[in-house]
Image (cartoon, rainbow, N blue to C red; front, side):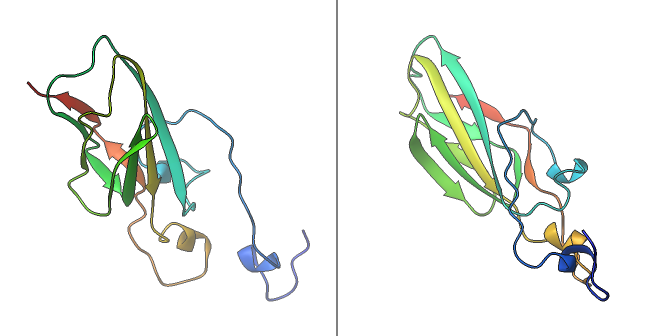
Length: 140
């Protein structure tokens, strides 16, 4: 890439850049501590499979702890809710069954991260992702 005078960094590329990531393993924590994701603004899916011997009889709550910035939860393909603000707790009663259960969480962060790669005075909070701790609480 040869940069034209006056067009450096992201301005050197004429048009949008699309980043496509394949499946991979990433743990709960701040995306911004990972150099590859430090300037990423967008969405990511977290998935987990939970095996249960029997369907829970009481109220079941999925507590994500702390999230930056929004979270949508699906359990076995059924939506449990969308949260834009804390508390990051979802009632998943009736969505779990005996055997394997798939929990999917879509987290979107803010645009603050992308501004780290741009010449701007805007600097927002660049934490992103599920910060946790994540708990599945089964009541009586």
